[in-house]
Amino acid sequence: MKISFVIPCYNSEKTIQKVVQEISESNIPYEKEIILINDCSSDATWDVISEMAKSNQNIKAINFSKNFGQHSALMAGYRETTGEYVVSLDDDGQTPANETYKLLEEIEKGYDVVYASYSNKKHSVFRNIGTGINNMMCRWLIGKPKKLEMTSFFIAKKYIIDEITKYKNPYAYIPGLVLRSTKNISSVPVEHRSREVGRSGYSFRKLVALWVNGFTAFSIKPLRLATLFGLIIASGGFVYFIYTIIHKILNPNTPMGWTSTISIMLIIGGSILFVLGMIGEYLGRVYLSLNKEPQYVVKDKINID
Image (cartoon, helix red, strand yellow):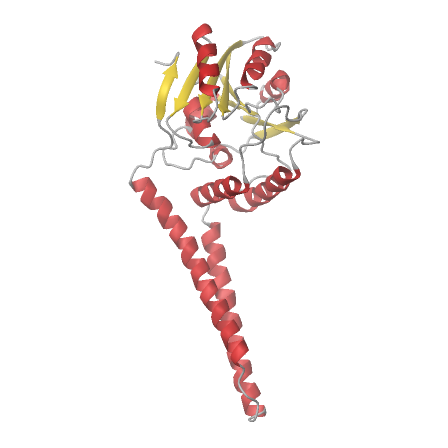
């Protein structure tokens, strides 16, 4: 049996060798292949992983032409896997590769996907808040089970990975692709380590972009929310209209309020722009898909036919 490890790499020249070494030295009694994807790092990450691939036939290396994001990098790696099980993990050493056996033991009980869960995450406060928001939105928008924690460290059966890679459109979102492929998912607790080098590649802007990309690709609930929001504002405006008429009849000398009128106009105008923006976001996704926006572009690859 073979296990494939897929690791997106971004500015990880100082950490990725240690992660690969930990995988190689782990006590998993199966053949291992490691697929490293350089997401156009600004440091010497490609030099490091290409050298590892040249010296080890079990390591495959992929180099992107520009930064496409972690989820696109995973998609590129998934398409090169040959193992019966596929493990996804980070390049910074925070996800414990030596605890992969816990995920393997759980998936062999009959699950399709098993996620690592962390009782004490060693991310920054900002990242933990972002993760909490992401989990809440995943539950509402794409049907994530309430008690399931979806992390970047997980194992999946090959047929699930094959189903995921059928997605050809831009802006891949792995949790959405997993949840639309299976509901037979479990999780196991593992350690989460402190970051030893550097900092997370996810800024606030990138996190928001990831959420928008994922949720508009796999759910129409935002459109329904926009419709509901517009209906509520319209209903409120109608009620206020009736109120002003009755108030004028009962108090003919009461001057009509300029401030309240402007406020209502701003609320209604803002609501219209919000709904139009939401519709535009979806239309933009359709436009990019029709124009075959690539998930990624491979510049170089090693040990891949």
